[in-house]
Amino acid sequence: MKRLLLALMCTGVSGIGLFGRASVVAQEKPSAAADLLKDATVKAALDAAKANERQTIEDQIRFCEVPAPSFKEHARGDVLKQAFQQIGLQNVRVDAAGNVIGDRPGAASRPRVVIAAHLDTVFPESTDVKVRREGAVLKGPGIGDDCRGLAVLVGIARALEQARVQTPGSITFVADVGEEGLGDLRGVKQLFNQTMKGQIDRFVSIDGTGVSITNVAVGSHRYRVTFKGPGGHSFGAFGLANPIDALGRAIAKIAELQVPKSPKTTFNVGRVGGGTSVNSIPFEGWMEVDMRSSDPASLASVDASFHKAVDAAVVEENDRWGTPRVITASKELVGDRPAGSTPEASAIVQTAVAVNNALGHAAPLGEGSTDSNIPMSLKIPAITIGGGGRGTGAHSLDEAFDTTDSWKGTERAVLLTIALAQR
Image (cartoon, rainbow, N blue to C red; front, side):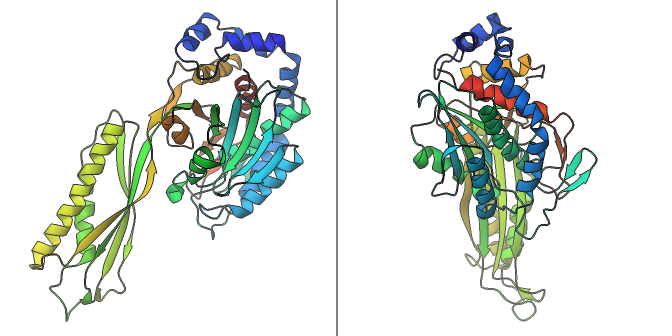
């Protein structure tokens, strides 16, 4: 283990929160991460990860066939709780938000590394979540995002236990709730603000597929806008201002917003609803709007433009029928994901890059909206990684996962976990 510690120091993981110098050291010692692969204990853990891949895939299918829409993750959480207990994690528990948590103590309590994957999916409870096999390909809603992450989460703990890896620092495994949609990252918000406040030194989210490394957090604002008016008969009350007409005006204005291409800034009207019948002037109409950017200033700018579009639409609809203030609009912020980043030169990013390189994977850095948004916004070292394999059709009923060489993702996650659990 002395050789392991020396190698890790060369990759810049020797100090919590080490920035700047880590990048230089990693570049000066490009073979240091490869030296980890010579340690017998580490090699045994990586061999176990590969040998266990059939079980990891079975877990992936098993987890995925339990419905888990945001706010209704309890049943899938129970399955993960049992899995945590069966592989020997300690102090397995469920916190106030519904996060399932298990510990693997090291020689010391710090540094504390948290490895997480999210329980929830974007699909409603009624969705058919039966997974179909077509050769090496698995098909089913959520099979990659994030049933793969959950399976790798368990796979890491299983490999470490089988190889009897003893790390200097401690590792906490978390299957968290509320990552998708209007879940608004409530699981990791609970984790960092209450359940494990002040206890987390390094954080890794396993989300999706491939061997990617995400170090930039795309922030988002999500609104539910409700337009209201008196309503009435479509013929007898004709001439009243119409909330859905106001909604339509707002959508048209939002569609014309201009946003920068770099940093990438986006907007989307994702859901609409309202009305009671085809022959009634509605008393209510609503829409849900999503805006995103990795740049806080750009996000604030498109947010301000959205507000102006809604306000102008209300005025225009009232003016059209000469009924001032009949139509009103309320804008409820239902999602607020902070933008942020973990610097490229930070120890955790450099370590992830070194691990990828040591295993022969490309190591480009990317951006995304994941559980890591929260620790990044708190300046806690954090990244998000893929769980291996190749995924397509995320967030669709046709989501698929190609298991070809998927063990490489589990192997990478095991090596990264060991590397980060050092002093």
